[in-house]
Length: 139
Image 1 (cartoon, rainbow, N blue to C red):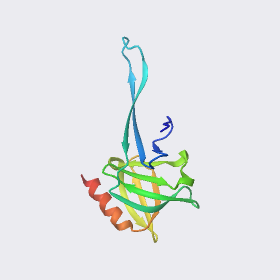
Image 2 (cartoon, rainbow, N blue to C red; image 1 turned 90 degrees about the horizontal axis):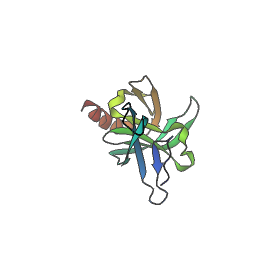
Image 3 (cartoon, helix red, strand yellow; image 1 turned 180 degrees about the vertical axis):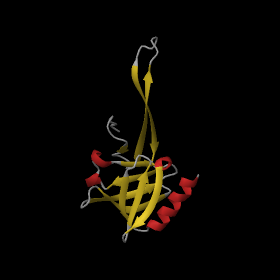
């Protein structure tokens, strides 16, 4: 699998598994260190769904892209369909950073994060997804 520095989600072209890359940037200030400056620690993890629903992600006020909204034990992840699988809008929301989840309209699901970002989805069967997400937010 070819992994680049500018994306978090990768899809294996052989098995189709989705892999999440979590990166931590460390600043090295020790004068004895041969590599002073920034060091990046990366950890890969396979996306294992607790709940997986067909959904659309509101890219803008008038455009949605289809895919799947996946709830794992630690994150909410939107995986776009293959023809929408682009780097521009990968959505990986750590549950620890979610402050509010609410419904609007007929099938809309809204997720607000600590950094004041709003992520909007069109999702069918949203009540089950919200219930499972709220359970994990309380932990």
